[in-house]
Amino acid sequence: MQSISKVGIFTSGGDAPGMNACIRAAVRTALHAGKSVIGIYHGYQGMIDADFQEMNSRSVSNIIQLGGTILKTARCDAFRTPEGRKQAYDNLKMAGIDGLIAIGGDGTFTGAEVLSREHNIPTVCIPGTIDNDLYGSDFTLGYDTATNTVIEAIDKIRDTAASHDRLFFVEVMGRDSGCIALNAGIAGGAEAILLPEKSTAIANLCNQLESAAKSKKSSTIVIVAEGEENGGAYNVAKEVKSRFDFYDTKVTILGHLQRGGSPSSFDRVLASRLGFAAIRHLLAGETRVMVGLRGNEIKTTPLEEVLNKKVFKLSEDMLEMMDVLSI
Ligand code: ATP
Image (tube, rainbow, N blue to C red; front, side):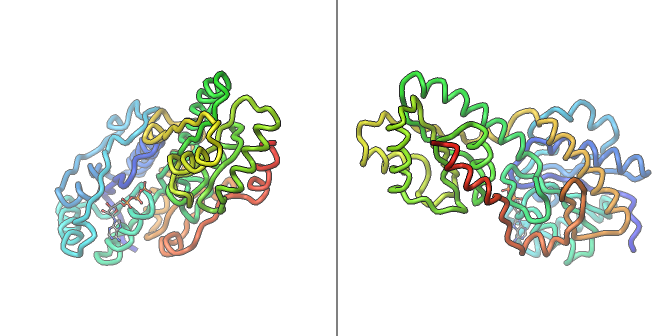
């Protein structure tokens, strides 16, 4: 087992609320264990450019409540090549970094897995993405905050929708995962939710909207997950309008506002637990694993499993409930 003296920490891929709380926890846990910590800025790009800075306990003061990531993040194509990763590893070695903590999504983990294997550098990953699309953790950092942001938006849209008897299509993020759409849709009382995991024909949606109109609903909100099969909220709205031209339809794409904002208490606590656990597992000699929340416990899962196992996080009862509660 390699003994680690200097831990490098970085965030990569899309930013997510809670990443800062996680950095804080990891930095302080490593310092508490007598290790040095180096912040690697701009993800893998920063590894290739040796964009490093030593961190102390004060480097992470007053950040637990901040969205985004103080270490910045980036997408880096050069890291996909063996030459890019060799350059990154040489920089890590030169700086004395002998263990890594990576916070990000599946792309970040793929990069971490290959770097760790090629150059034998111990690495522990932390799930940080609003999409909640990773195997091995019930929740990812930022998902809870993003869902709450969407709910707040739905509530506001509901006010204007009800005042004008309008039909709104609200598109939400999540890539191929419908977690944000389903949970925010249920919590916001949506009349219909279109998900990547469940096929919904436009004809069926129209039937649902017709019954909503017949039951004299004063507003109708349809949540459209970005990865669903009908091509996004604008397309769905156009299709519905072509069949029911009497509807006053509006489309709202929530976009990047879902990524920002102060993390919820759930995300702050989860981030702290994951950052703390990641350092503990790294120092105990584990490598190429992800720390995640399962039940109410923090567990590790081999990266190979995280990257290869299919994840389905929508419970059947919620899928059934979504139609029942919208009548
Ligand atoms: P999010 O889920 O928020 O998009 P992510 O971590 O999946 O986050 P990606 O852009 O897919 O984000 O990946 C982040 C970075 O990881 C990439 O820019 C690239 O540098 C690195 N990476 C991704 N895939 C690979 C790969 N196959 N080999 C090496 N590095 C990779």
